[in-house]
Image (cartoon, rainbow, N blue to C red; front, side, top):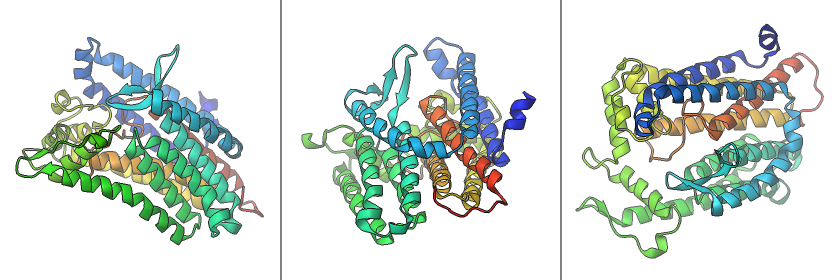
Length: 398
């Protein structure tokens, strides 16, 4: 054990943030799975042990990934990206349907659902970081610099969006931020944002147009709009835009009640009442349970941990002497923190319901393990940056 601790390198603050978030996760999941356990005739302890197992596996993944030299990820980036595309296509047409979405494929034998968008996101950011580090001399050129970056982003986001629009938007936004930091022309980035806004504004206008303000309900959508999850997206926009205290969507209403009950100091660990009414209190709406049990102060502390994680990742970006590692650590940290902020914004009704989990805190699954993989890669960059600190490095490109 002492040998493992001695071989554990990287940013100590990020390690501490990971440990704190996983501890909070086990406490809140044990508290919030009571109703689920009762409905499925299981014990709440079984979910605690399951989360403990995921946490142990996740920490092992972080440790293993941080011991691997991050330059390996540059070599396998293209392979992972090529593998991700057919997996996304398969998921789109033959994916397992869970909670009205086909985002998963079932792995045989172990019977574990696997969200292919998590692999695609990791592969895309590896590939983008590789391309950015290799094309700095021609990064302002549209054909040689911009197209090789934006085409992979378009492919991945287009394949994810039909089943999981929120994740596609998250990946797209993080990719554009990474391109901006990587010195891509602002004119090209603005063009992409303008094109992406067209379908979004169209969706919002449809949501507003097919809502009866007098009767406070949605109008019947034409059959042409009953494609995939378009009706779900429209309903979520309408719930967010028109909801008042009486007509708020059920899960948002229950989240508000949980936050109101929590007050400043909370009801105490395990004393949540809204866990019995709030849908998915152990995943999508776990932040509302945190505030109910640990108060607004507890909620602020969780937010502070994520922001501290981002700050330390930016510090790694500045210290890393090689462009690939710098871009990769920043991309992975941005996507995790933005995802956390979106989840928290949904819980406090500042954003429409998205179904995005809270990284390292929501109940374990493939998303939890891929989050751990991302953190391990960030720590790998930090570990190698520590080794190179003080040495003369002639080239910044990988």
